[in-house]
Image 1 (cartoon, helix red, strand yellow):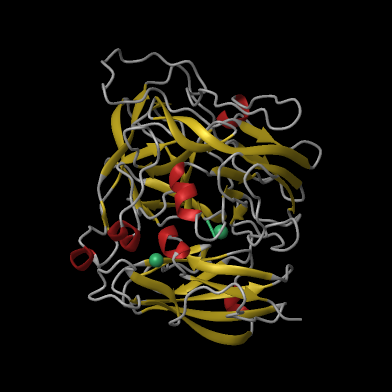
Image 2: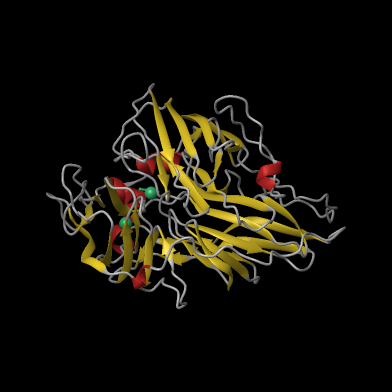
Length: 490
Ligand code: C2O
Ligand code: CU
Ligand code: CU
């Protein structure tokens, strides 16, 4: 497997001595076309350090702290092991992932493995744990042997500071490699946004920004502003995208080129599906195959996404604006690349539409006025919740029976779009604006529920029981209470 991440992987002795490594330069030596470099461009796209499991285990230390390089300059933003994104954790189904999380922040944090189908209890994907400032916490994730292969990610999940800590730079990719992954060169592209103040610190959002969901004015790929990707014409590559933004919706497009959608949210779709653009809500991932047939320069951009409407009322704009993400330069091949794979991995999960539904539920995104203010503009702003109530860690909101399939209708009575995320158990989208018209199962772990609209999903509450959460992945909303508790029974 000649993938870039492997090639660029640092051989690390001991726990987590990760540093960012420049990479993604291409698998073959290529001659550049000699044209001048865009003065705005941030150089060749780097890949975060890759920490790969061996013998069924990966043990790493992640140190959350301040001080990382972003857009080519030293900042007081946050990172893991001194970089943002943090190291890429590369595991296989059946592996045990051990993480020692060390907190060098001045506030509490913790760790969530977004999208992984692992236990939400104990030292596993337990977002109720707290790792205080100066403390370390040990996590252990037992990844099932039949876990789907794909792109996942990790980030803090301490209620109340999730948006600040992700906006600050705390996130990294988590790749589950499969035995039948296509043999393609790979790149990881983690899209994030941040605003920095004059001192290079993450800027504090205003109240209207929190209400709408803050967007940073620097849009970064792997911590770089407008990096360059050199590819070889005619060679197919696999690009793994993570939308790590707090609130920004991303709609990926590569000039007029078709993109091949291989998987969403870590779930393989089968042979690549030809698309013009791919929309990623915060938290979503897309695996794409890209092949440019001729030499030339192309812009990878995110198109404008209208995410609905409090804009006028709250004095802020809820449209994620069009922005260039990277420059892609294709050069003529000096020799030919590997042939396109003949087989593509199909869905790793069975279609739930054939299963009996044990229970139907309706869960509704709601917003209200804070007490003691008028017109939603007072110091408290709006309240955010589900079914009219804010998050309460002491309350169980949904109690599915372990081992059953439920059908959830997620409704949204607010004027703005909210991305619905459920931990631990993936959702099969069966109805709603974003659902694909094909027969193949459409798996997600973050589903966009448009303002005034609804979607329907099937969830199999299997294998792991316990207590965890669902929430809006506009993380400012989550921190303000747009989160509920699901606890399995039996
Ligand atoms: Cu990306 Cu509850 O998380
Ligand atoms: Cu998650
Ligand atoms: Cu929301």
